[in-house]
Length: 574
Image 1 (cartoon, rainbow, N blue to C red):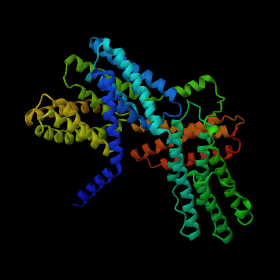
Image 2: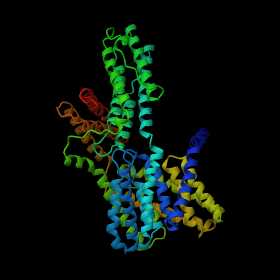
Image 3: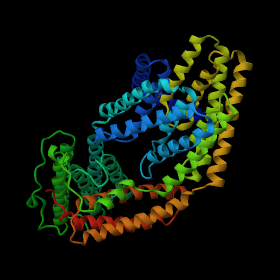
Image 4: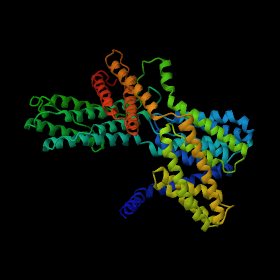
C-alpha cells in the first residue's frame, strides 16, 4: 500500500511540475509538424517529425556560442543524410550497402561523445525514418533537401530561443550554490557544530561549470576570456571552502570576526551573481583583522581573487575576446579531431550492425523490419556493460506499452479515436524522464500507426503486437550478441584508457605551470578536460565498484588544484 501511495505521489508531483512545459511543447510540436507538411508536402511530413525530435534532443548541448558554425555542420550532415537515404532506397540493396554503412558511421562517430551527453540516437532514428518510413524518389529529393536545410535553421533558432541564457543561468546557479556552501561552513564553525565536509559536491559543481564552458567553445582550444573567468571564480570558491575545511585551532573572537567578514563578503558576491547589486565592493584586509589571525591573509587573497574574476566574467568585451594558443596548427588539428577509441569502435560496430540489418530487411522485404533496426540502434550502447540493462528496459516498455495500446485500439476502432490515443500517448511522454516510461508511450503510438487502418478487434491488434514483440526480441538478441560477445568494448577497458589520459592531463598541467610558456588556452582546456575526465571516471568507477578510484582521483585532483594556484597569478586577463 505504501509503495502504491509513493508511486501515486510521484505521478501527481510529475504532472504538477511538468504540466505547463509538457503542454507548451506538445502544442508546439503538433503545430510545427503540420506547418512543415503544409510547406513541403505530405511526403515530407516525416521530416517535420524528425526536426520536432531533433530540436528537443539538441538541448543536451549548447550550440549558441557559435550558431553559424553549428548551422553549417547541421546543414551538411542533414543534407548528407537525406541524400544517402534517397540513394539507399533507389538502388539495389547490395549497391546501397557501402553508402548506408558510411553514412551510419559518420552519424555515430560525429554525435557520440566521451565526456558529455550523447546525441547520436535522434540522428540515427531520423536517418532510418527517411529510409524505411518515408522514402522518396530522386525527383522528390530537391524539396526534401530544402526541408532539411530549413530544419537545420529551426534547430539553431530553437537553441537560441531556449538556450540563449543557459551559460548565465548555469554559472549563476553553480557559483551561488558554492557561495552558500562556504557560508554554511562558516555558520557551522561559528556555532561550534564542526564543518560538514563534502568535497565531492565541490567537484560536482566544478564539473557543471566545465561542461557548460566546454560546450560553448568556439572551436578546439578556443575559449573566451569570460569562460576563463567563470572557471577561475569557481575554483576560487572551491579554494575558499577547502580553506574552511582545513581551518585548525579554536574559533577565537578574532577568528570569529574574520569569519563574519568573510561571510559578509560572500553575501556581496552572491547578491552580484543574482543581479541584486551592480558591483562587488573590494574586500578590505583591515576589516578582516589580518593581524589578528594567521589564516586571515589567505582568506583575504582568496576573496579578492573571487571578486576579481566574478566581475570580469560579466564584462561584455570578455565574452567575445579569445586569446590565441601558442600550439602549432598540426597540434590544434589533432586536438580538434580528437580521435577516440571508444567512439571509433562503437561507431564501426553499430554502423555494421545497422547496415547489415537494413540489407536483410530490404532483401527479405520485411513489412515491419524497421522495428528490428530501431531496437538494435536503441539497445547498442558504447559500453557492453550497459547493453543488458537497456535491453531489459526496452523489453519491459514494449510489453507494458504494447498491452495498453492493444487494449485501447481493440476497443476504439474509429480513426478519430485512434488518432486521439496516439496523440495522447505522445503528450504523456513529456511527463516522464525514465526510458521505460517514455518508450512505453512511444510503443502505444507506434502500434497505433501499424494498426490504424488495417487491424480491428483484439485478434488483429493482438497479432500486430506479437509481431512487434518478436522484432524487438530479435533486435535485442542481435544487439546482445554483437555488443557483448562478438565485438565487446567493456567499461573496464575504457576506464583504464581514461585513467591514463587523466594522469597525462594532470601531469601536463603541472608541467605547464612550472614552464615559462604562458598559453592560457592550453591551460584552461587542460583544466576543463581534467574535470570532464574526472567526472566520467567517477561514474565508471561507481559502476565497476572500483574501490581505489577515490584516493587516486583525490591525489590527481590536488595536483590540479595546486597547479591552478601557482598558475593563477601568472595568467591575468589582457
